[in-house]
Image 1 (spheres, rainbow, N blue to C red):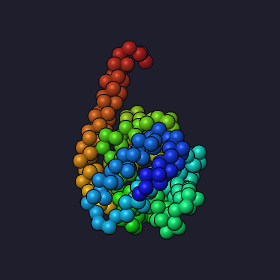
Image 2: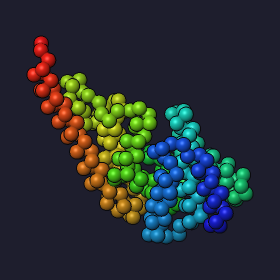
Image 3: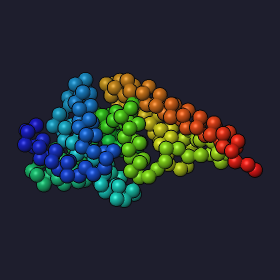
Image 4: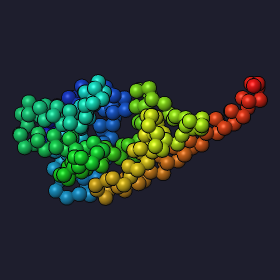
Length: 226
């Protein structure tokens, strides 16, 4: 890839990044993860891969403004229009669009090309481990969602089966099970290396908040009469 082409796409990406959990550093981490994975795969088109990584989250603004919008679909079309408008061939722009469209964690539109599979894995690696926990907490804070919710009996829920969004609910719904959904061997390996860090953090914070409630309620009863 020519340096000027990279810079053109990078500048466009930077103009679209407004979400602190999906900022430019997330983009660079995904790109670097993807290049690591690509070294273990065959017949990878690095130009398509780099373009898809740089542009994969350009639709985040549209989704944040309207939650019914899929950022992968919106971003795929924005990237396609951008690339075509800057003189890139139709086949190239379409290939990048396909990678971006299928990078989101869902079963209805799985990635097909090796570049799309690498992007998918590289993006999911950044949801794994300690960095995945940190990004989730940043995002939950931005949308004013709590760390946890309480069950009807007043006990702290671990997030399993919760209908209300929270960090614990997100961990149980998505973060805990993400390690089995990778397409490449290297992507799986990279994610597995991070898995224990995420599990340990979740277990520690769950234990701490439950301890606060259990001990706190007992102590409170000693000072508040019937």
